[in-house]
Image 1 (tube, rainbow, N blue to C red):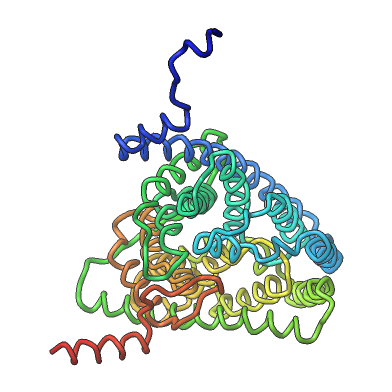
Image 2 (tube, rainbow, N blue to C red):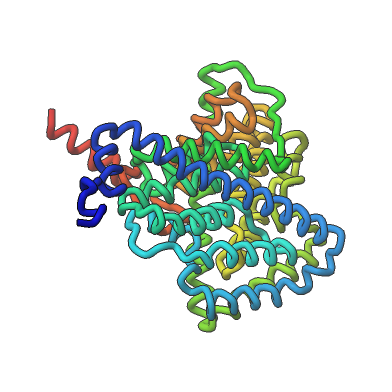
Length: 436
């Protein structure tokens, strides 16, 4: 008789793991997700550091060699060709990521990461008006989802995995891990938070931010000089400003969707859409004689906290960003929305008697809150960036902007889980009256 037959039958490793998870569910959950999020955070933090450094380089080169803007139409055509022939399955960008959180069917293709990186670099190098958070989120999500198969993650676990990846990407690119985690939990379904993803989201965001900082990557520092004492009048001023921010967010969102539909209806061959948009943006830059409305626009955002700017700056940034992104250039809307909100807050300081820096900071996050239906994340982000002293004012601005932005979102894949719109207010009021 063989020795194998004499050996008592042992339990398979998979069965032992299953038994352990049944006996110690919380411990298994914590160990499992700390391991996975540590891996995601390390990858995302490293990629974000490299991305931010390369973005700084292309921005510096462009500003020193303005003539490269002439080739923006050519770069747009190249981006269009790349996505049309090789990247149709990743062209949806952040909408694919958000849709995967809701219904995780197909794995996010890995090619999303290099494609969006190359597209974003080309957009910024040649003078488009775009951001960076969308790129970081897509790269992080595309890489993280590749682990779902080797880790044999179930459908619900894949949702948590993508939420953690979004938190890592957003938190590491801005140096705001708290906001990154809350944003990831809040953005997929407006008005509903997946509490089973809280630990992975925060763990991934903090790990990614730590790794990014370990690579000695610098984040922009903003400062609000004066925060007035809380009073009824000051809070009413904050509400008034929030209304303007919400209306601005709604205008931007509708303008993005409308312009995108217009490009598609007029120009049937997709690669020609960014080519035409590149011509428009390049001509506009030469006509205005300034590059303040292209790229990230960080110098102008910093100015908005300390000195008066022309009241039309936010309108021009809206126009440049909509034309750039609606046609198919890459980079995302987040940082342009920060710019729009900050300079709009600066403009509001002409007739709303609150400190300029405070209004700029309120607008910085509130317009983004209205455009993405993420008021909690944006309020947290403001306190991470500007300090907790402004917390009440920015929270009021974000919530008000959220309410007055309507049923709009820059992410068409985002679903509603209790959106507080006029319709929701009326129906909920009618229900309450019936209960009485």
